[in-house]
Length: 127
Image (cartoon, rainbow, N blue to C red):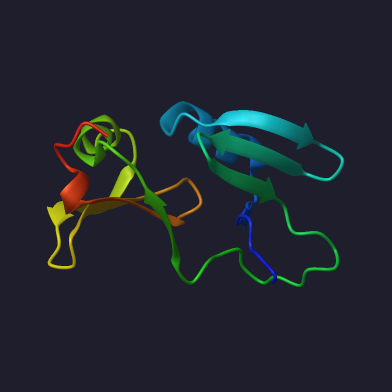
């Protein structure tokens, strides 16, 4: 049986240095690897991995963008909100939704929507 073992999105950016700085200094990721010849980098925060790249000549792109969002499951969503609400452009403020998630969203330096959520059952637990 085939098993999926992870997802590591590649986000395109026009300015790789600026994007690396955003993910390191604002979100606390660490730089795992970088290749300036390829205009590529790999970043990690806990069990979350993201790659950054400038589109290459095989990837026909008029405008870099993404029709969706990246959703991060986190613990201590309220603490993360307090840390990020003055550091990044807000998409929507923290709220508890009827589907059992407490979440908020920001934009990264490229305009990608980054959502952060915690199940309501986890809030206040010691896990």
